[in-house]
Image (cartoon, rainbow, N blue to C red):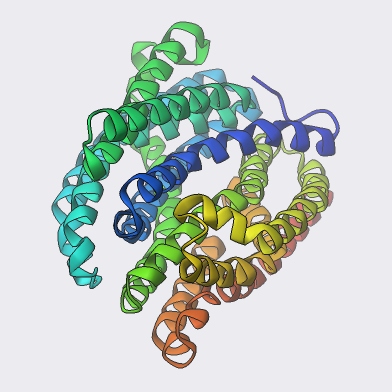
Length: 445
């Protein structure tokens, strides 16, 4: 465990985030590997089928990540304050709430997967494969939830390395199982989904056993499971708020996917492949944001507000530098990267995918700022403006799908992310600086 309330903010943030970046990229590798292997082994139609489920998977995983991040922030506050009894209570409460949510999320996701794909006007030639893939993925929601909860709790306590090791294990399992199921057994789309879920389930189970045996914060006493209602409500308020923020962005992506489906299989395949590259490219910026949630939560619990401001300034310098480099790589190396998915002979797919990478790559520095301000506010327990920011992203994505795409077609759809990042970042930046000024002025009185 790492105490983030002492030491150089720049060094703490940088070295805490490096394992987090690797871990988050490994987590994205599930989707990347599914897309890569399916595209090369099963063809463009199969690639489009998997890609057409991306926005719905983003919604489900976004809810899971929001919930577990929210629970972990509460635990991080108590950890920063040095109250280990409350930390154990928080962990126990988080486990119970996660179990309850996993039941409802799994049932809802499995029942709604095909109706939602139909509502999104998924092309008939890929609908059946898309439905099979999404239904199997949704059935494994509890494994996603448990793995994310354990990883986020580790980070809240200043440990970003252990989640990396388990994500590495999960990624290796996924590759081995997917190649076995697709090439060895010939199970097609269903095999790709089964490999992903089985890899996550096995990793989450091993992770839980590790925590129960090796981590003193998981050595519960009877009273740790009997928290007062106010304790449960604080976890629900933060977790549900962050899940809601994630879901608003994902709903916008679903509406965009619905509009995209009208442009045909080639556009779907191009957008899907580009999104996988974009998702991995986003990971450094998101990882620095997640670091700021843990860093802010601990220092807020320890009442060290000046360190929070110092950390934000340091994080901006590092994350924006990463964003500029990654954007340049995507804009210059995009054709080669897209060729990994579909082969160099699919020039129509490559050209359409490159339009997406150019539009998003030039705006990555804005995304870096958005993540820093959003996660810092969440670490401070301020969820109203991040929620408003999520609504702004949703509104812009809907506008892009309904209005901009009607005038500029596929190219207009590719503008949705840069526009939504820019407009959503403005209230977050204003709220952060106003919040910090108010906190610091109160402590000086």
